Image 1 (tube, rainbow, N blue to C red):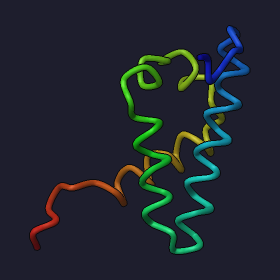
Image 2 (cartoon, rainbow, N blue to C red; image 1 turned 135 degrees about the vertical axis):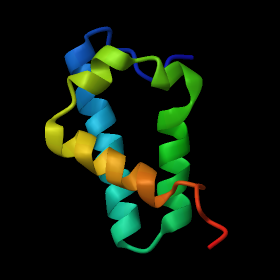
Image 3 (cartoon, rainbow, N blue to C red; image 1 turned 90 degrees about the horizontal axis):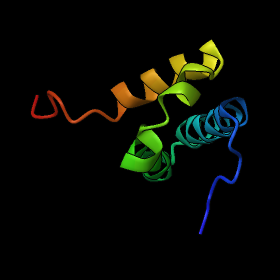
Image 4 (cartoon, one colour; image 1 turned 180 degrees about the vertical axis):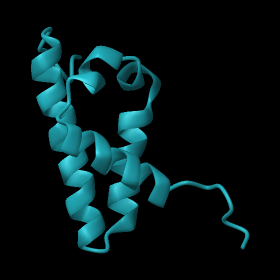
Length: 79
């Protein structure tokens, strides 16, 4: 089955930006498990390989994704 049937990277970038906005909205609602689940989906191997699509995402979405990744990072969790 195909989750993203669009073959154009601009259309995929819009879809990726939607999922970033979804993860941000879930985080704003304090639904950290849902936000983490969406981020895990964005980091899975088949999606993470879409480098051109990630580059074509709006800058605001890329910055939001970086912030969410930092928030959900496992580094220095022991402190």
